[in-house]
Length: 100
Image 1 (spheres, rainbow, N blue to C red):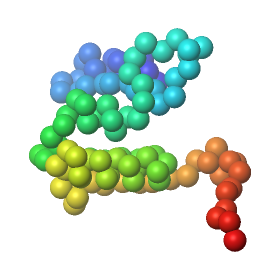
Image 2 (cartoon, rainbow, N blue to C red):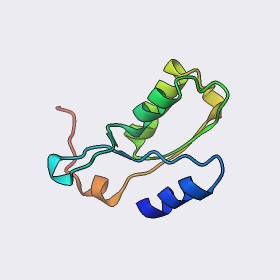
Image 3 (tube, one colour):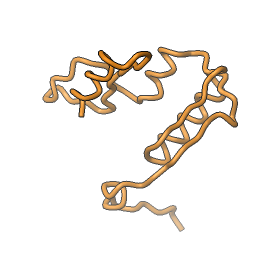
Image 4 (cartoon, rainbow, N blue to C red):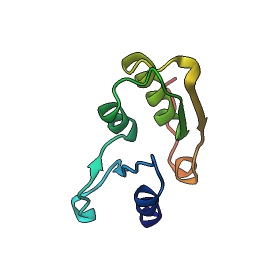
């Protein structure tokens, strides 16, 4: 839905679209930003003290964003809202267990 988001960025006031691909490969020929999306947010908005954050995604991503935004970007802890979820791909991954 990249094209739709680009259209919104052109037509909706105060709407900004910054696509970030977490693990692009050379075969993808991705020319945009890459890495963790919350790192891109931190680069663009290092002071989140006057904002609210609504995040969704894998628990590890949500937890990392919460920790970084609150400790490094001055986001008040009570202004971070999240819906962490596990995808079918996460469920299909082999489980690792702690050694006995």
